Amino acid sequence: MDSTKRPDYPTNIEAMRSKLEMYPLRPGYGLWRLLDRFRPLFFGALVLQGISVFSETAGFLILRAFIDNVLLKQDWNAPFYLYALGFVGLAVLRSGLSFASSRWGAQTSEGIAKTIRDAVFDHTQRLSFAYHDRTQTGELIQKSTSDIDAVRRFYGDQVMGILRILFFFLVNFVTLLLINVPLAFISIAVVPLITVLSTVFFKRIYRSYENYQDQDAKLSAVLQENLSGVRVVKAFARQEFEIQKFDEQNAKKFDLGLTLLLNHSVYWPISHFICGMQMLLGTAVGAFWTMDGLISPGTFIAYLGIASSLIWPLQQLGRLITQLSTSFVSYGRIAEILVSEQEQLAGTEQAPVLKLSGRLSFRSVSFAYDTGGPVLKDVGFEVGAGQKVALLGETGSGKTTLVNLLPRFYDYTGGSILLDGHPLEQYPRAFLRKNIGIVEQEPFLFSMSIADNIAYSVDHAVSRDEIEAAARKASIHDSIMGFPLGYDTLVGERGVTLSGGQKQRITIARTLLKDPRILILDDSTSSVDAETEAEIRQALRALMVGRTSFVIAHRIESLMDADLILVFKEGRIIQSGTHDTLSLMEGFYRQVFELQTRLEDELVKETLHV
Ligand code: ADP
Image (tube, rainbow, N blue to C red; front, side, top):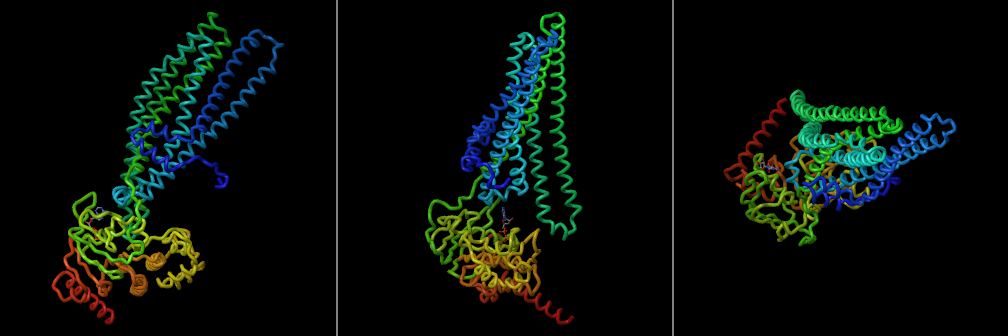
């Protein structure tokens, strides 16, 4: 639908979220609260349904009158046109009501689903890093899609269906009472049985659906990971392994799906049998009474129609009630996201310093992730504004963790970090992230034009000249101009495929445009060829000028000019100083330096030899 034509749904993300947050464990009540401003629309739809049910039953009453007064009396002078008009009129009325009620019902269920989707996406954007650490992306995707869809069905199919059936039941039962009281009571003999059956199956299906959705989330996670890591899979030719991994999870989903369907399919024949028996009983009693002349044939035929409108919907009612359990499970899964902790981005206070110089002081900083023991221990050092700090150390020694503390992706657990003389936690996260630029090891670009990718780092409009200037500084302008559409070239699946080095330089241009005071660079030139490496280095040098920079270094070349080199081991700083001082001292730094120089010398010799 064209967005200009989209009805103005009464949505309020904040209200919706707070409702979901308030009633995470009480799905019934929570789902009622979520109706919120959709109530007039929803109840309107229900009333229309009710009138439509009424018109259906009225049809049987006209039929009864026709049989008793016209058919059996062979009255050729009867006003046939009136009967015909009655039937046609009711049919037209029913169609109109059914259309209007479906439309309002759809507006309600789609409207609520849209609002929940918005609320979930909104919340997902602000989830803490810790949440993402323990949740797989596939699971989040599944909750944002299939679980929301289950909640949509709750309003669209289940509630509407259940209320419609209850209404059906009521109208038909009252009509039966009016026709014949004993017959009416005989017709509802199955109600207690169906109620017990539905309750038992509600619980069974609730459990099996919960397991099924959990497994579905696992499968989505495997799929999502496989697709994101498709290059790695291909590079290591691990397709067979991946297929097997998928197969295992898929087989589990198959088993759980089977259990779920089995529960549904056991319910169905049992209830079918019960309702069939009921129909048989009612028909037999009705038939005998008609033969005895206790009721008229017209009453008997009307009874058959009304009773089947009473009993078969009852069976549907049981099915819908058991399906409700699936919506309740999904509601709980969605609410789980919405009650999980969010990052406070803006904070209520202003940053203590609005124009940062980038001076940092780490004092006996320690840190531990939620899941484990200390990762940083007693880390202390000073960095002047505009200085370059290089971090060296084995994998897992805590370098990434340290730089992740600066934008407050995680908050340190001990000691203090002072930025321009003020504790880091006094700065709102949004402020820090505006002032800190990060060039990741794995550059990530969105599926949009190169210009838009560069401009992504700032939230205000930027001119093409500014974008070009940043690209020039990042030594990527010429490559961009080489593409057929220049800066308007699309990146990603529908556009050009960029090399790793090109992507890296585009992300550098993006960071240059942002013009942050502090920089975090993962020195990731190791995977590109020598020429590209030189270009990236040049781009990085341009980027670092005048900014406080933290470089996670793997090569001595990118360490040598640092104002401060920190060597990490198991979360502690074991050496610190400049290249000149450290290369003279015994220790890890000198070992790495000597090893790399020797390797490079050998490489040069080998190359010259060839
Ligand atoms: P480096 O960057 O030096 O390779 P990291 O900072 O990535 O080291 O990791 C330091 C330690 O913290 C490792 O033992 C790693 O397993 C652990 N770690 C890293 N990230 C997380 C995380 N998100 N949750 C829990 N533990 C983590």
